[in-house]
Length: 176
Image (cartoon, rainbow, N blue to C red):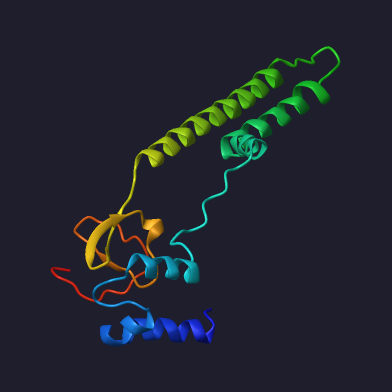
């Protein structure tokens, strides 16, 4: 559901020859200069996607208890409460089953919360250890920069195994 202007720009970017595309993107086969890259960043913004918002503690805690296993345990606790406490004869009331099932439900939720928190922290540490770079042509020479510094008009060199660091148009390829 793109507006007509965006659809027309995408169509042009996909079908134009490199000679038509370079002026439209304010670049050249030599790439951008640092000054041009800064101007492009001001005009078009950084090459960054909004980060995922971290879930609040109450929400993570609630999600630890909302799962099929917890639902079954909760249902069994309700049934047990009805049969062993509410509708039981005055001398036959026995809360042990309800207490055991409730303890299992509580233990299961707390354990899941702890495990999810630990795995999230480990994933965050791994992500912080990995640094991605992209090879761009600036001032006529290829060099590596963080993907966030890529701007519209940058010429990017991709090699085997590289992650594609931005939306881009292939202008030239070898062994693709």
